[in-house]
Image 1 (cartoon, helix red, strand yellow):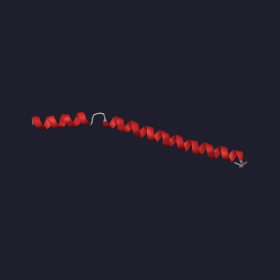
Image 2 (image 1 turned 45 degrees about the vertical axis):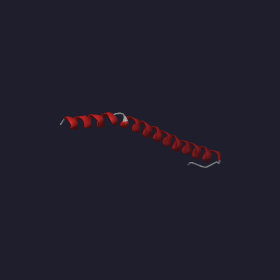
Image 3 (image 1 turned 90 degrees about the vertical axis):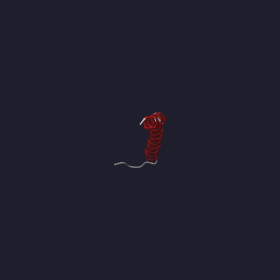
Length: 56
């Protein structure tokens, strides 16, 4: 039983901060992706305004 608790403690210590780092990198990549999509939408809107596209 002591050996099992020791293995469990080693496992917990090894992966304690893993999820925080993974979520941090995921949200950073997601925010850059959203910024890129927003920039494309703004570019398309400005392009349509400058070419005289009728929105109505």
